[in-house]
Image (tube, rainbow, N blue to C red; front, side):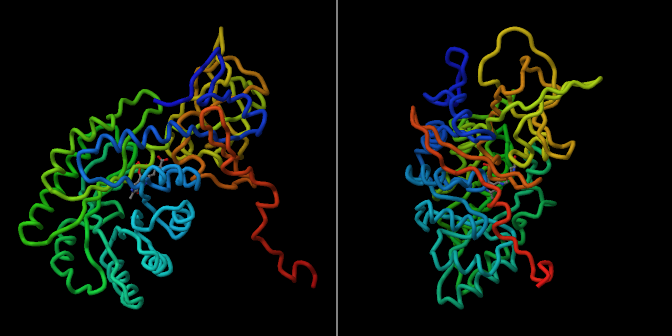
Length: 420
Ligand code: LLP
């Protein structure tokens, strides 16, 4: 469910007509519904009410500090993967003790900053990383809290680029090696192993892969508990799928119902790291039709957003529903919706049935809240889009449109090229 709906043939975000936003702020424009965002967070929170849970929203899905603050204010923690995301998390007012930090390639500088800030824990992805965290925390005279990220070697049944829990993926540590590390944990005097972590992939529609992975780790935790290795929490990662097209993903309630019986036996705090589930359907990308181009074989609708604004179709052939801002009557036709970028991969839809459109019409690319703006770039020297948040009938700019000056801000022309 989301709050983008037609009222009298016009698409609205909450109580605001999106056409008015497109005219006022220009396009491409990301529009987020605050209530849809919070609603999804609350759905998950309520589904896990019966256990001690911390929902650490995955910052990479959408890292705008207003989105982060909206969630943090409701009690969410944050899942980060870089020093930049730590910076954002703190700027959004997230208490350090609600931050978990994953990534196979944390640098010394990033580790040091996170230890100094006192984050809840690192999700450690290899033995050399654990040794490094131990070394750095010793230097700082601290004890770093860590969770071992385990690669459970399960099939997530999703796109191969977003599968992370197979043993051939770069993520996490296999069970045997994790066991050895846990037995030797006292050798690492400046780290405390407080949990285990898994994350098997993204856009997973069924609960079965989650159940398989969680069962595997639950058995392992059971064994650890029997031999006296106690933990504080089990971080079950993110990955919940959402509806882009005709998917029928599990609801938060169904997900919880399947896995809670396994988790409850462990008597541990549970951490979740959802990104897409919370923010995916709370954002859209609004774009303007520039030209309609008919070739002998095809019809192209050329719009002013490009793969630099939303790369998911180009990268994963991902499906995003595309809706006109004014609900059309009458005929429709098959067309490709493409951007202005100099690559054939620059498309949003192929052979899609759309109403007859004209230059100047606006379209909404739906389900663009997650991995939309956060994966955008300046490719083709295009300024990144503006972002606005709608709250009922109020509209707030949460990121200004970039200007040409922003494109070259950090560039310098060396003296020799200036003839000096
Ligand atoms: N935790 C970890 C350790 C992760 O690596 C990820 C996502 C998440 C949580 C959040 O996953 P979510 O709940 O959003 O599925 N760019 C791709 C998705 C990449 C996901 C990367 N990791 C896309 O646009 O589909």
